[in-house]
Image (spheres, rainbow, N blue to C red):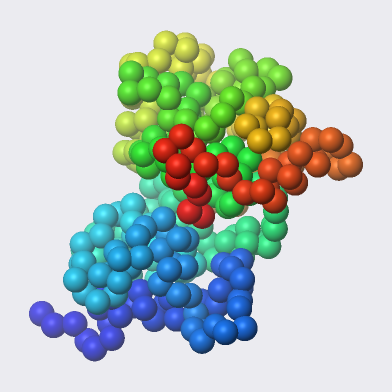
Length: 293
């Protein structure tokens, strides 16, 4: 079976890249810029893949990207649900089915996120899997890309198992009431099982945590159903010192995406330190790497 001209995986990625203006992805537009849409380097940075891999995809030399890469490309390109599903099929993958947790960020939500400026914000799926973060988040908490993708999960971070902590935050973070936050996260996961009863990733997460973390197992056995909406944190930032922030959790609707926003009290010393951390950018990690998003 042949593919119509311009309809293959590489051609579609190029077409979607060309149509997305950098301003829609909160990227600067220089005077000398000739490309109307995103450059390959910009798409690679937004999707968290190498520039070489984007080149190979567009040239047809890479034809079987993983589901994780496809999901990242769909988010970076701000595809509609139909376009996202088409991208999955072009990669010979089955699109996410109804009733499964979605890692897709709708274009409208993506545009809102890109307009939040210096606010530290990240997006988690319904099972608390981290799927997107901005540079301010990385500057405040450290670059999550230093952790393996499968471990970028807030529940795994709070209830570590034998494989060690996920380290979503690269420096110490404390809360006013750790026990209350633990209970809220577990209760939120139980709520997710009612919304997504057939989701295999969620089921596996709960199985692993129940079997390997006693604290999680005890809270899960309590059977509480609730949503995690807000808390207060102190971040021991290596460059600016301790920063006290309010952490608010918003949801986007049916897909149960969790938009987590961290802010400081206006006019406070913590707000000054937060702005300083964001302005100076993410500190280098122990291996010398920095944020790519």
